[in-house]
Image (cartoon, rainbow, N blue to C red):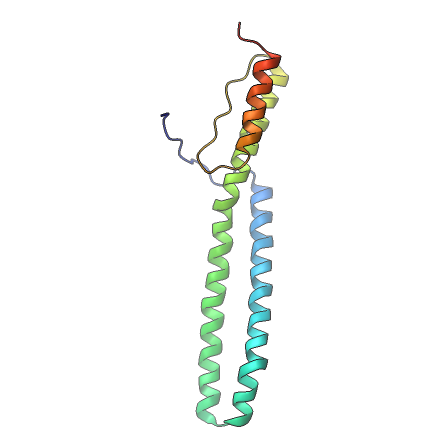
Length: 139
């Protein structure tokens, strides 16, 4: 069993990873807005009409603030987590690209592409390793 590789840098392909985090954030925000709207119109509007009063209005305000606070916190937290998830994609792509670039520049046999457990594109890395071994037989 080989030495375990640890991450040293989480933003490998900054443009891809930040773009993914932003898209993830927008999707979560839209889901939160749609859910909030559905809850408001399905439940609160009926409750306020039926049981109007100062206490109910205060309760509505407190619940709304908490939903906003915790919802935005969860959305931001999950968006930050998407950076770590995208690392499992961006890292292998970066490693394979660097290996192919090195081969194209030097025409020397590149080292074996080794990916971490749980990384994406392990099948592609195995295929590239087999390709390099066929193109460049051992000396």
